[in-house]
Length: 597
Image (cartoon, rainbow, N blue to C red):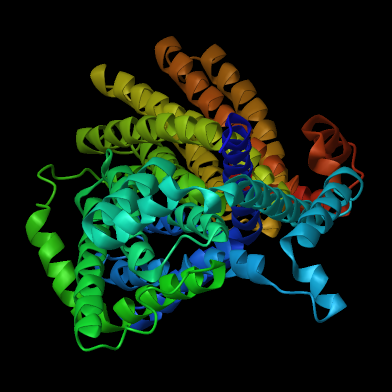
């Protein structure tokens, strides 16, 4: 084998691995919504979890990605450890689909012309042509067209690399040294097993390792007795990397998911070796022991091993769970009220952007809830000052800040991954919204400081000011409620209600400032209390402004006019929107009517 064959071999390997990556990324990007819906239907039944794991892996072409996503969901509390066991078993079966696709290398088209279309030498260029047409000329039509193009291009690159590898290794069939190497593997299955472990560990993909083995089958040097230990070694090599990824910075249950994967694959290894030993001893394997393996028989062996072991080991799902609980101790640290939200922001979920964005939404929804409660409680504190309420608001503000920092960093990391149009819109939307809720939390703290200033001086607002603030508080409840609903439920009707109230709040603040200045002139209020009251109104106005921003961001997802916030607000304020005009008049009459009582 010349140096040029070696270069071609590794070049083909590079194309093969890159093709798998491109195809897998395209499949994941186009199926994240499907994955989310499927995962929502997972129950405590390991058999159903098995089907889910098998389906997920068949869709995204990567057992590693399935297990890493599952680990992230377990760590986030979305799935239980018990539910993950079945998914792990199913993932090992789903990963055999890639090998079944690669077996097209064995297609014999000599008898029927139409079978030529299924040969890799024909499929590769056809897939590449479809891919480039979709990517370069049709990608503006629909997002799904781009996904199809990416998957097709990855498929074409994968088979091009496979053909390069098979072409490069074909001369090895005439090399005695190569043939003798596999004879040694047949005589020493432990050595062959270590080779499978090492290659799978280096490539971090069982599918890729099996694919390379299928490519080498073109030499005719691979026999069953030399090949099966390599296939079994792949199980351990693949799961070690996965378990390491699952353990980095993870909570106890997420680490246990990786531990279960290792335990299952070790049991699978022992089960296969024991089964082959017994079948060989009783003569069942005599007919295939020295049989030359081709791409199809390698794929079938891989599938039969994984499927048989999954069925036999399924009843032990509860045992794996109990062992994992004993091996990995519980987290010692008792979490705060936002630990669940912070743990949801797991980088392992980057493999499924839709799931990652769902975690972000839950974290921001918590921020919205805490900021809403903070403002309402702070306004109530002007009637009866309570230090405990202030402490709770301050603690919640710290939680909001921690969530904001975590969400910001998480979204920045997620933005570096390939996102489809819908998920990219969601990411931008969350980027815009979380900062608004953080600022509302800040203004809630400002309001507690205003109340604290009055309490420290053992004074309070005049009865007139208190009654005015009651009306302002009602308006804040109104706009904050609509804002929370608009974001948490992506409710466009609630989002439309925000701007009319915001405009009324602006008018109320202006009117109340004029009233208060008049009271100052008439000596009905002290200067110090007057300054505090004006500061309260400023904070109220800013809170309503942040709510307005969330409303416009939400509307921009449904109303093309809201794509430019300034233009959208301008249209509303110019009286060109019937809904706004009606809602504004209704809210204005209500709140100003309350002020006049």
